[in-house]
Amino acid sequence: MVPVILGLSFILFSIMELTPGDPARAMLGEYAPQEEVEQLREQMGLNDPFFVRYWRYVWNALHGDFGVSYRTNIPTVTEIKNRFPATLKIAFFAVLIAVILGIPVGIISAVKQYSAIDISSMVSALLFTSIPPFWLGLLMILLFSVKLHILPAVGSETWKHFIMPAIAMAAAQMATLVRMTRSTMLEVIRQDYIRTAKAKGAAPARVIFIHSLQNALLPVVTAVGISFSNLLGGALIIENVFGISGLGTLMVESVTGKDSPMLISSVLFAALVGGFVNLGVDLLYTFIDPRVKSQYLKRGAK
Amino acid sequence: MTTKLLEIKNLYVEYVTDDARVFAVNGVDLDINEGETLGLVGETGAGKTTTALSILKLLPERVGRVTRGSISLEGKDLTRYTEADMRNIRGEIISMIFQDPMTSLNPVLTVGYQIAEVLKIHKDEKENRQVDERVDEILKLVGIPPERKHDYPHQFSGGMKQRIVIAIALACEPKLLLADEPTTALDVTIQAQVLSMMNELKRKLRTAMILITHDLGVVAETCDRVAIMYAGEVIEAGTVEQIFDPEAPHHPYTVGLFGAIPDLTKKTRRLNPIDGLMPDPTHLPEGCRFHTRCPRCMEICRTQRPALREENGHRLYCHLFAGGER
Image (cartoon, rainbow over all chains, first blue to last red; front, side, top):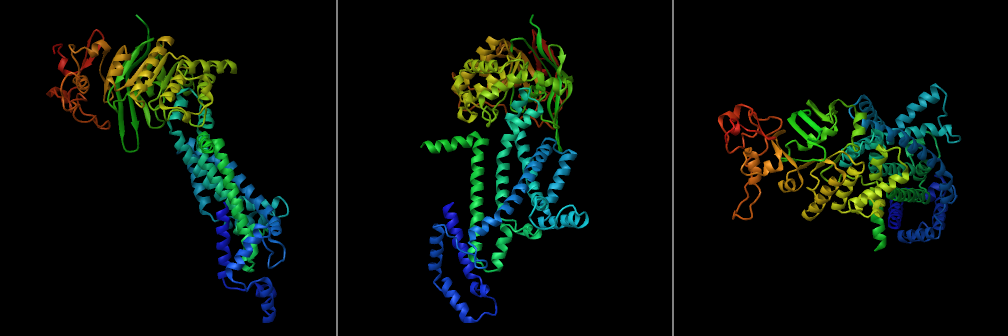
């Protein structure tokens, strides 16, 4: 994880360096005199060589100082702390909806393969993976806010504000989960140990929930983890559509404002969160599959 | 005379897929008495496993189905049983050991749980403590230390896994055990161990067994009676003595099977396989199914089905012996 963060910070730093635009100019405004801009550049250390500045950034970061936003003068860490909860809430609800609906539907369509339920759920899954989330979001705003006046269109003040964005984000994730659960379940159902379970006289519910589900869960959990960390990294478009000030909007604002400390910090933060989610998923594996667990134990014993 | 435990009459099984109809079992007659071991011998694809699966009604869903015939357990026709009725039969009265022990145990459940499960399904009046005791007992019976019941299948070797599979199959002391090539996936020394263990357990528990194999050596060691299958038909059946008697009349396929076993006392440079392959089960040949590969094929074999010739329970379907003479 450390090399990933270090590499990422270097790439981000380089990109911000190479793209046109002057942060000092952006801060002072278009009509500020050239001398003032130069003075500010000197003050901010922008005239130092690239590697000196990168080293300074890393050194400060190691001491817990991730810089101050060029635009607002608020420490980037504080800014992220303010913005992240909104993103976390949406991502959490989106994943929750996707899991609660996606996995059971996937199981049902696997068990009743080629039935009407299976076909209709597969068709709608295909539909939802193809629909861009922002479009779905806009349609929902039109229906629920503009026409029916049930839900607020923008903002992130009450729980009502989170319903639509969470659903808009969940739709695509849910569709992939349905397809994934279905295909792994179908694979597991064909295994020999399922036949053994049936030969024991186990009832269908027992065969599905005790013998099949746990075996089918591994790839599904991976998929959930990936989609969760993606959503946490900020759903830029969805947050913009619904006017939620989360991590995604923060990143977009930073890019347009040439606010490199803010951008670097927020992307690094997203990477860190992704890393932790993946770690959590890996730990979860050991509870699902005893084979993975004994692999880790063996390595530890050496 | 002991009573018939299981009687299969004129059984036909088909597999229907999108592009073909496979005639897997075509008019099989089999019966087995209490405590008896019947060997079911034949090449891969002869319909042995399909026959066993149709007894338990575990044919692949939507694809395999019994089209004709009856399977009766102690006089009751299993083909008319519903799924719920069959669940009470499976594991309790008839249980099955599958071919590959590597894949027939669930990798995420402890072996103890997998053994206890079959007990819990069928003996629901039993207390948990009793189930635990029974699991220990049955593990000891198959020669595995009971303290290993908390381990997962991947922590066992192939031979031990097969012992666990056998333990699951025998946990409820079934009347009939269907053993589908129980030793094929194991190496020779373990094979011998597992077979002698199965023989011993069978005697102890007085379980009847249908042993599916293609190993005639295994048949000679363990079986009372033998049925030889070819292309979904029983072509010859009798006691082990009758089938292994070189003087008695035999189906050319049986002769071929025995001929394929290398003889240590003779100097031979090559093995003697039966020429050709099993006929395509989607387009079975006319007349005798074996005529395309038969070294003693006659004109009549190509057009007419051979009739049954029975002598002291030794059943034989071949035109060569139709008139009674050899």
